[in-house]
Image 1 (tube, one colour):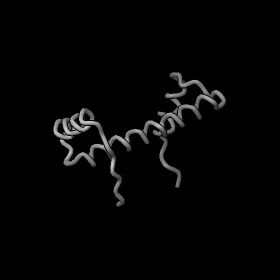
Image 2 (cartoon, rainbow, N blue to C red):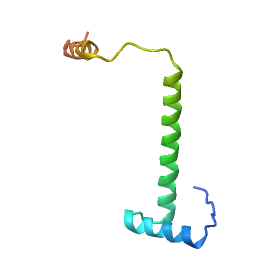
Image 3 (tube, rainbow, N blue to C red):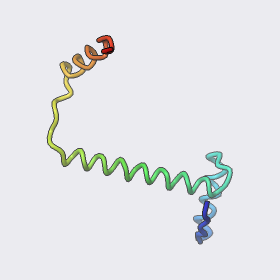
Image 4 (cartoon, rainbow, N blue to C red):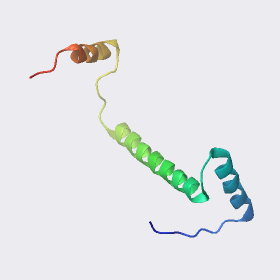
Length: 79
């Protein structure tokens, strides 16, 4: 694992320290890694949402759609 040094104003450092203590992180590095992972997840979700918005409309997810899904799940697996 590589290291990265980040300079923070005192107010932000105090905030990070408070978050580490309040949320049960072991270190400020764990807290920052979690923030980065969450940001990555948001970026992935945003990409998927934009991809979905740009795609052609699909079949409506109405009662008949969910009934057909339940029917398919109830069928025995094919050998």
